[in-house]
Length: 346
Image 1 (spheres, rainbow, N blue to C red):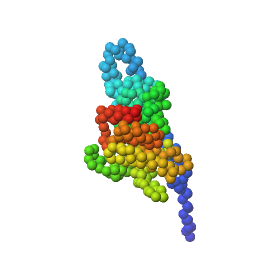
Image 2 (image 1 turned 90 degrees about the horizontal axis):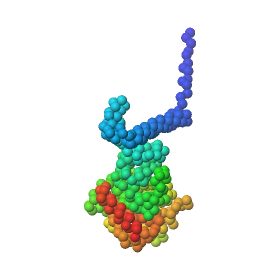
Image 3 (image 1 turned 90 degrees about the vertical axis):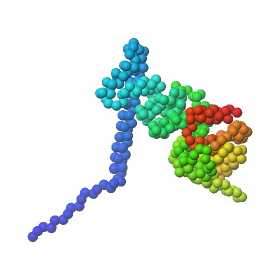
Image 4 (image 1 turned 45 degrees about the vertical axis):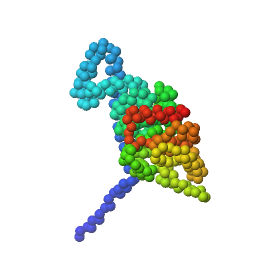
């Protein structure tokens, strides 16, 4: 008689989302990320050391005599042995890198060589430190860093505020990171990622719609810490009701930020309306722990009188800024910045 064979149960399999699996996976991913960033920064330090040696050789007789040909020869030999990345242009970039960042301990480890190649084209040391710290703190890609440099991020910030960054001590570059209570807005805002064309007819709802359609890019252009709350948010009293174009919350400043869109020139009625919105929002929507509400009027034009003779002149909670639907030229940016400084000085 044949003996009946019973199947044995398979070993109990770990569930896919077990604590051990999740823990191990996160540990491995974090380790790989750390290895990646560490390796990148080791190369950054290597390039800094090479740049330092190139500068030191400059003072010697050999470099003075052979100059460019010396670097050309070194680049050919390094490229033959190690491959791309050690060409003549990159060696000159390493030299400039050392000259602009002579304190190696001030370098941010979160950034790689492509970031620093972008940074060395910024001649102003204070602006360069701002870009470096902002890129590191906010995980900017090289492409986004280049866009901010092209949009004159630094110049627009200091043009908007009376306490200019250029009074800071540039020797301590870590202290040059933008403080949230100092900087809430750039002027002008560059909205060149929208499909509205300059000098064509459009209304405020058109601008509002393209902002919503490109919300992520708009948040990046606004600055740090912004999150979207509502569009056309209704606030009402016993007798009246109003609709605010856009409402955001800034988790760094811990306050609501109201934005009112205006086509054409800023008028005194616009300032009065925003003042009312801010007061109402503080009374009806602000909760315990929130700082006072901030109001921003986005307009195409503003003049000296509207700024000087309104609450905009000394308000800490209401701002007016211009917006551009295209990336201005260098000359246009300079003119915009000079105009903003002139408005604030009077």
